[in-house]
Length: 289
Length: 237
Image (cartoon, rainbow over all chains, first blue to last red; front, side, top):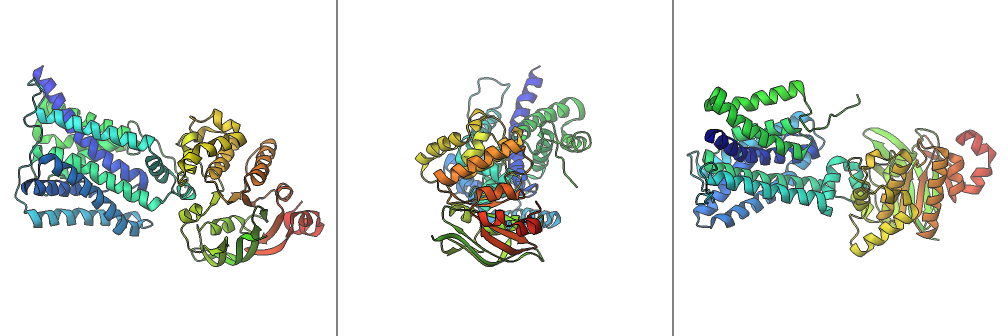
């Protein structure tokens, strides 16, 4: 029984990370209908920024928030400088751009910080959970993620700027007609996605260790979570993340062993696309042709 | 009276296709001007040109300032509220959120509540439906919401694209009555595009008739209305 509970709680912690990555993907997808393949590498780069700051002697939490702020600015800049030139470009061109970004971030990180695996600190190492059923880092990850998700929810739901961003994503033409600067809303969306991704990266780095390829598997899980929950539904994507995290752990422990865990994500991606392309909570889109 | 909107030799293009060739008209401050004509005459395109949604040639002046090539959202911020064809409702947002979006560019936050009260005064039905998802409103209510959202911008000029489209005659009458009140009480100038010429001519003070991207007739609404020749040739009733 203890093993089961441990697997579930650590699954929830992994799930929190997948949920964040999924949310970052969904934020950009709802506004542009594109999956940002570079989301994971951007998060990885953010981690290196945090690592560098910590290495220079910055206290963890200052480095943490600085990395988030830098990632936000970076996300906005990438949209304004690169992506805005491709607003009306065909899908394939955009995919090339995303893959280009992925390769650039990966290589630049390797070039600056080398491909040697580094350790990344967890701020929760000394947290006392009072039980052996929940790891301190796992508990911290879930708490941080819930705080971030709640903050984002409140922002989108209750602030005029959040409302304008939702409007710009849903109906850009009408948004312009009420004076919303749609281009900047997209850039803000990129900034927020990068910031959320950065948090996910810094939470997963103590587990998988820091190296330029650390996010490859995580991005796949994030993508699977978003698909599972419904790629058009932020709440669904978050829930999808938690479901996937737990499911993956249980299947890994009891059925197929840990080495084959990643296949769970792939099986989910394929089954969702075959049996329920809109995901568990997504909207079915009807397109006139 | 000074012209609020002055359009001279306007051309407009969709890609390589030229939709407007030579459209000129004026709209007086506080007035209601209507553009009439058959399908494909260029009425909607003219409205879209005024708020920067298509590529244009010629001149569009708003309050003496040339606005060709200015981005739509910036033209909106200069006081032009476009109620588009199809109403442009944010269907997944609530009625309240739709209205709040109308005041997104309003700097003076104390004005927002006043504008909301104003809107409810004109459209009491929207007040009853505040929390409802806008996409679930009836066609007439959505048209009201579109005009209400435009009114939240506290505009100088309202561009209305076929507000009667697809609505029952009684609802259309109600909406046109409210438009008249808004024009008189709030001093909002209007540029109205309509298929229903009789309706439009009753509301407007000036009328321009478009045909294949050119202005072929113009004059005070009362004159155009009584001119049987124009009615037969261009307006078909």
